[in-house]
Image (tube, rainbow, N blue to C red; front, top):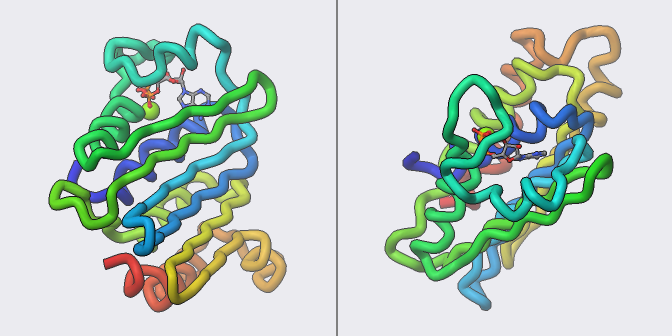
Amino acid sequence: MEDLSLHILDIAENSINAGAKNIEIAIIEDSSKDLLTIEIKDDGKGMDADTIANVTNPFFTTRTTRRVGLGLAFLEEAANSTGGKLRVESELTTGTKVIAEFQLSHIDRKPVGNIADTIVMILAGNPEINLRYYQENNASKFLFDTNDVKKITNEIKINSIEILKFIRQYLEENVNKINK
Ligand SMILES: Nc1ncnc2c1ncn2[C@@H]1O[C@H](COP(=O)(O)OP(=O)(O)O)[C@@H](O)[C@H]1O
Ligand SMILES: [Mg+2]
């Protein structure tokens, strides 16, 4: 996978498969610590101890459609290759938090990529999800919350073409420029 945004899409899909209603994605860029942190938190069904222990093993999956589960293994590999690490915190019935840390300036750190597209893709297929996206660097902070969109669009569904176009444009203006 080329971009971190595609990893984020993959991890958010795990949250949706776990029945999450609320997903929070955060990207924190701290140049003073040379650290890029990505967090994906959900209120899905969570994992038992056995699942947590095996979660980054590529040959472990609880899905039945294919026998390997690679989403978290690939993200861990991407983090490790920069000298960073992956942490998974999860509690049954409460939810899961995935934290990936990267050395920001490392030559092997993948670019963040197109977060606007990733968010639009999640919402297009899962309009009932409440999604919060938070981004911070040493110069600015930005928060996008689908609850705010839902308040102003009332009866228009969040995954209607016009609303998705609006969200994509709004995010492209506010997000991608500070993620280069
Ligand atoms: N957010 C989550 N909530 C609950 N379980 C999860 C979550 N993310 C991952 N898992 C568990 O970890 C396993 C491995 O996930 P992953 O590496 O993405 O592979 P896959 O999704 O292909 O199984 C999943 O099958 C699931 O059991
Ligand atoms: Mg997965």
